[in-house]
Length: 80
Image 1 (spheres, rainbow, N blue to C red):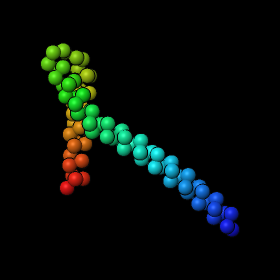
Image 2: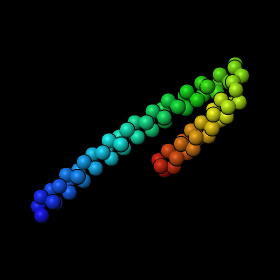
Image 3: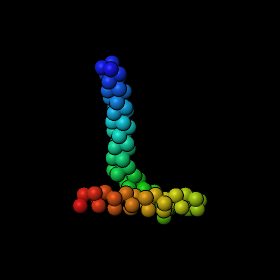
Image 4: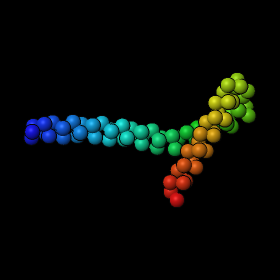
């Protein structure tokens, strides 16, 4: 019985380590998005004044702006 419990504990430790790694990667991605995406999106938005991109590019930029706005709202709500 002890061997079974030890095996179960080992399996749970592996699962916990897996999820810790996944969470860490997700946090890194979120931090990058919070810092770099709004800046890059603003630069792309400014470029629209100088270049006439295809409509699909304009739609993508507008969609990204909405997503960044939603992300900022979520972060602001979490801080309150």
